[in-house]
Image 1 (tube, rainbow, N blue to C red):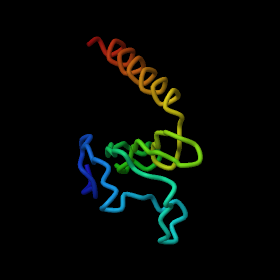
Image 2 (cartoon, helix red, strand yellow; image 1 turned 45 degrees about the vertical axis):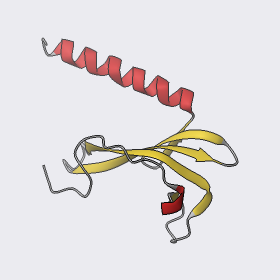
Image 3 (cartoon, rainbow, N blue to C red; image 1 turned 90 degrees about the vertical axis):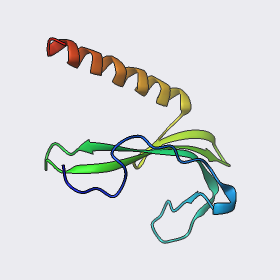
Length: 102
């Protein structure tokens, strides 16, 4: 595995409004005051096409105009869709393990 910027396991990051937990959505250095990070975790995944290992942030956020959401890398999901994705990934992992005779 290559040297990565973030931890290699899920790490909680508690929301702190005084610290200014906001997200730069456009990359221009301007933080979106209407989008607050409640908690964030980092997950290390392999990019199959290149073999590189990359950090993917997962965040619980509150969006003033839309309510609660979960972000996975550059993607946003409703909280219900995030729960469905989590259950789907758990089932797929179980099937992959079973296919390997575990």
